[in-house]
Image (cartoon, rainbow, N blue to C red):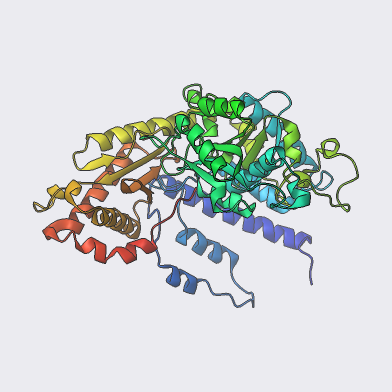
Length: 511
């Protein structure tokens, strides 16, 4: 087998790399200008048939990559307003290229010396932004789900009252965590992974704005204890997934302090607001949290995945995965070998994920990210105002950040049909789902939907700095167009019959 590092092979790779970058640059120009479809929708079964594997080789890499780009979602398109995943900075993608080529896994310092040093200092910088004291510490991990699991493992070790690593999940009383009804599903999933069972995530009611009600915490605590549960923590949201709501963190922190409970903040989406002088007030109290999860791939324009798990008391960062691997770690105490990060993360092999964030801050600076966040939050407020002023739309709640939930209710505008408020809830919900399905199939926008107590709402997350008020006005026009077509002629009841097709395209509460 010939080496990939011969002069001829390296020259071929250089030529190929230039061609790939040229193609991607052209793609960025076209996508950023709003050309083409946002989502080239295909049915899943059809897409699978497009990508067979024969394992025989011989494919043209450039043609293959052209197909990948053409058939993918285009997050740099200004009309991508779907999930909470950023349109990443192009230079961050170049950092991923460097990371992939170097392939320095960050498990032990000797394998990843540069990324280990970067991670150490980024953790300290982010902890400082949160208002944590000098002894704060933490790690980076692969996404908010892994981050929340890591923080909850630390909470269990600190508050369970028995050594779960040694005695197992049933070595003491059944454990529970008080969790907002609007918390991301990864929180309850993590608790079930940890052996808490379904009742391990004890729900706390939310108010009309979908924020946790701190006055409901005492009753929730009493009810959990009466059910035989040992409550160890409260999880609050800073930018919830469904609506972007920020829980009243200071009030929750006060309750946790009085009751000796671990206070964890899922700030995957909203912790970046600490960078903004305008919006950091939404996070008052986060400095009192025991742990915080913060995703840079949501509101810091980084490619996925880059998640920081930050602990106010840095000693707790060594507790979630308190095991030994003699071939990697010495017999020293974990705190004495802070530089061997695999002892503190779910991953035993971790990419140089911090490189892109470190480079983004080094090149662009904190102010750039603050201005970006201010712009996205402002755009969301203006869009919410446009929805509120439109007689045929309904706003679910005033946005706390860059997430807006709304639905079309203007059935009365179509052929004298009854108003949306007069429709049965199931039919009204199916209309929203079918509108979204048709929007996806046309491909000019990509938006998602969410289920709230009042029913199904369409949902946008504004993360692309190229998105304008005009784009969002066009989105309302398109939703209105499809809504009127669906109920025109008085056939709104047919929406329920076509619900199965819409359901296949219906996303659950994903980040």
